[in-house]
Amino acid sequence: MANKRLDHVGIVVRDLESTIRFYTEIVGLELKGRLTHTNGVFQLAFLGFGGSDETEIELIQGYSYDLPAEGTVHHFAIHVDDIQQEFARIQALSGVELIDQEIVTLPNGYQYFFIYGPEKEWIEFFQR
Image 1 (cartoon, rainbow, N blue to C red):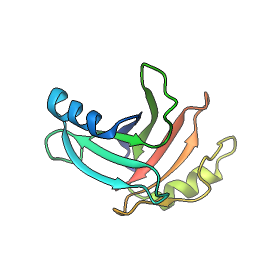
Image 2: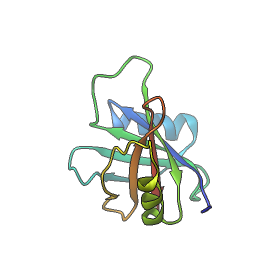
Image 3: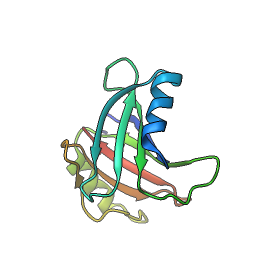
Image 4: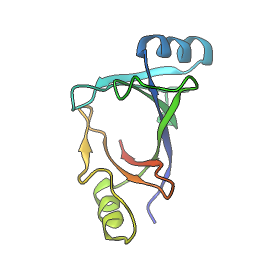
């Protein structure tokens, strides 16, 4: 099986700027990158520790502003070495419900697709 690891956890936020400030100034994460999703709506920010390519937090603004007071974890992501191979493997399995019908490529070249877990949790397969 291909090398897999937890890549990041996606958190839906109301205010990207204040959330970035909190996670950098209070928690001590580093802002590793920002971009606008290819859909032109979502603003994404990637944060991590130590300047490496380790597990990080992805902040997502614009997905929903109707959030509960305690915040919302939107998804967790599994890093894969070959997104095409992983997409084909998942498509061939019975009983797996795809959220994305094709692989999405972000402006920075990262690629991903989502599936539902058994409790309708969102699971992302992600390649840098």
